[in-house]
Structures are given as C-alpha cells and as structure tokens.
Image (cartoon, rainbow, N blue to C red; front, side, top):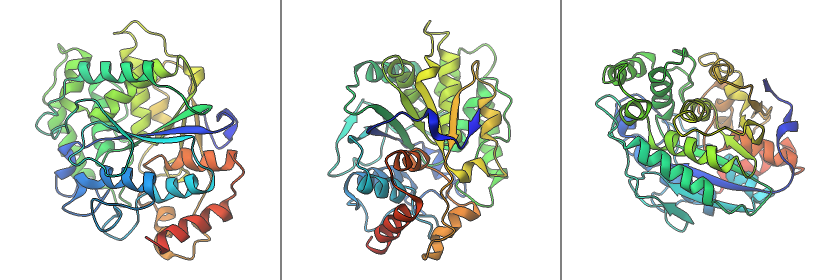
Length: 346
C-alpha cells in the first residue's frame, strides 16, 4: 500500500497546483515552526511566490524554521527549474496576504480561526467550491499535482480525523524534530470539546478543520473523475483522503481511487513520531501511496541535512516534486546541485 516504487505515477508533464491557506491555529505559541517566528501566517504567501518566481516579494527572505531550515518550496522550485511543470498555479484558500507576481485563483474564502476556539468555517460551502473547481479545472499537462502550504495544518488534520471518528490519535507528523505534543494535544482536545455526536460531518468540519483540507477533498472527488491527481504531501493529504472518503456518502459520489496517488517524502515514511500508513489504512479502499528516497546526506550545505534529521519533512509538494523529477530523468545529484544553487543565491 505504501511503497517507494514510483510506478503508479503517471507519465509526462504535470500541472502543479498549490492550495495555500492560513488557519489561525498557527498563531498558538509553539505549535508550529513552519515559517519565521511572528510571521507564520505569511508562510503560504512566501511559498506561493517562491515556487512561481524563484524569489519572494512579500518579505526579504524565504520562510524557514527557527534553526534556519529553509521551506520545502526550494525543493519544488528546483524541480520546476530542471523539469518544468506544464503550469504552476496558486489556489488562495484564505491567505492573510495575496502573493505577488503569481497566477492565482480566489474563491471568496477567508483565513480560518483557531480550532482551539472554533475554526468558524462554512465547511459545506468550502467543500462545494472545491467540487466546482475540480469539475471545471482544465488540465494542461498529462496529470495534476495538488500540493499544500498550511502552517499548523498537521494539527488541524489530526483534529479533523479524530472528529470524524478515525482512530489515529498519534499518527500525524510535525515540522518539528522534537514534536510539541502537549501543545498540539491541548489544542486538539479544545477543538474536540466543541463538537458532539449529534452534529453532521459538515458541522464538525466547520469547527475543527481548515479550508485546505475541506476544499481539496471536494476538488479531489470531482477532478479524479476526469484525470489522475497526485496528492502531494504527507499526513495532511492523507487527511484529505479521509475527508473525501467520508463525504462521498453525503454527496452520493463514488471516489475514483484508481485516479489518485499520494506522494510524499522519505522523511515522512521514516518519521518515528507519525504513521501515515496507519492513517491510510482507515480508507474504504487500498490507496496508491508512494514515497521517494531522496536525502540530503551528500549536501555540502549543512543546514539541509536537518531534513534527514527530521525537521520540516514535507510541504509545498516536495515529495511529489521529487517523484516527478525522477520520472522526468532528473537524478539525485543534479537535483541536489540545483537545490544548493538556489539556496546559495536566495
């Protein structure tokens, strides 16, 4: 079910969509390190600008962790430089600042509130907007890579899965090497205290989830009926699959699972603090799920080796970008050289 054999990845060029979103859960002190301290809500905007342009405009530097580990956006941009995607586009699913010099789509969705006090999302509306976007999306290449940038999204993903009744308490990853489990657990417990068994699935999602998860679940249900979709990410994208699987009954739709692949990194596959395979085991079908084997072991820039130590791990489509690079003839050495070139010149 979860393998490093990349044969389920389609051939040819891929469109790249980045679902960029802010949940104010990210402002809870110590809950995430996916960006510059005090400016975490800017991370998706910076990621969007960087993968589109190779540089950022809304701040003087790319998003990075407090220890200096750069955003996975540098990986995705390096892949795009070496084996260009057929298109790169941003889905604004509630940003605090619109990305500059990028091609993006807006859907009238605002940043969601912290799940600790209630996310304040109209989940049905966001889901339906995702379905409509999936129905209407015009594919330029052979298939679509759907990625995400949502700081603290693993916390909202965990809360979502638990709210929907899935037994995956400790299965979700984190951008931290040393995961702040107490903060995450307190936040999730606060979120779960807001729901009850009498609520519908949409009512629960409106309180404990985030816009990216809900929108992408709707998008996936519709888009996968027409072409192959690669969900680019780790445990957050696994949660998208759980939501889509749960909601297909509400909207009386079949999920075309043969047209869906989840692609993530070696760092997620090897993560001792999460279990993506166990999350995926809760689906009503056996999914195509792959991980790539790229590592920074040979990197000359030491800060990149922190990925191998367990920091950052995934995001901005890194795992699927690695898989796409391999499928288009880019080897590890060339990819590492390009990532380091980008980092030297950023």
